[in-house]
Amino acid sequence: MNHTIHSTPTASALYTPNVSTTSALFTPDVSEFMSGEIYRTYDVLIGLVLLACFVIGLPGNLASFIYFSRRKDFAGLVYSLISGIDTVTCLVHLPVMIALFNDRKPGIFANKIFCIGWNVVFYFQAKISMFLVMSLSVSRTIAIVLPFNRVEKPAFLLSFAIYSLYLLMWYVLIIFFGGDEKFYDYDTMNVYCYYDLEGAGIFAQIEQTFFALSLGIPPVITLISFIISVNKLIRSNIALRMSKRNRQASITLTAFTGLFLICNAPCFVNNAVYMAVFLMDFEYPRPFYMSTFMFFYSWVIAEVLSVAINAALNPVLYLCRIQGLRSWTVNCVTRRKIELPRPPLTSQTQQR
Image (cartoon, rainbow, N blue to C red; front, side):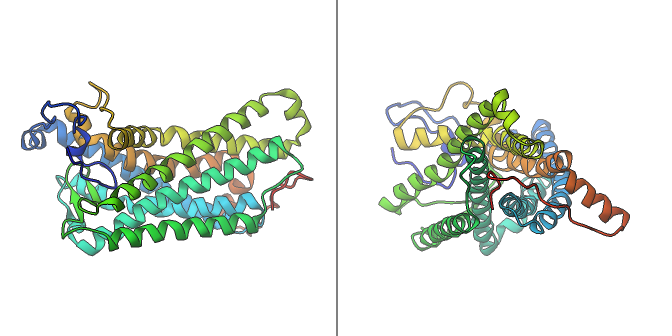
């Protein structure tokens, strides 16, 4: 059986059996489900959560971006980039929210140019966000484990630029090797645009492999650094050697990384299962993936809802953990003179 290669599996691809089986595809009655009240309830509920994420996340991330961009330290640089990406995340999910409120009609997704541009931005912001969280987590782990070493800002900026160019290069190649007029299209089941490389030959397999690596490697490295950081922080001798300011900064970053891993767990799991099925001919786990609910909601929850929730909760975490941001926000709201507090300083462990 030949599998259609997608940026993510469409609903029909989600239930394609292993090539060694002869059982029929799991295909629920789409028209029956979409005419039911339960479907409307689920769609409206997800749409309302996306709306809440937009209302909380957009102003929160914009404020965080302005605050962090004024800091000169390494953490401030990465946090400002993450806040900027999270701002884009809050905006890029708006067409999905509108489609959910409108019986999954494509709306602006019906415009082919917008569909292509949206897909590029959607996956670029997701992958670059994972890269930034990985960079921030690894840099703090190095500071905790190897206090006399640090990650230099020029090295980080160079790696960030190279990775960004790498992602953009792949999108250019994908468009170049694309198929027919259905190459980029809106998918009613997933409620967003996807790209289809069926007929692209070996390039489709290469692209799928790199897609798996770009979504798989950063979370694994982030998880490893998170575990190392937590292990070091709970050891009293390590904590006692750190200054109070440094310890608070490390706890903040550890909480930030933990939030990222928890919110994005559905995305990581879904993509891991999908890659195992399409690259190694595994079967989808039964009966969890063989249900009508998973047919319609697994990917919109994994790749849209969970990411939007993470983007909305990040500024809340910043506000709870960073005193300087709280003071700056109060100054802005009360229109008092805004003075940016000094960023945290460390002797050998400060990353510049």
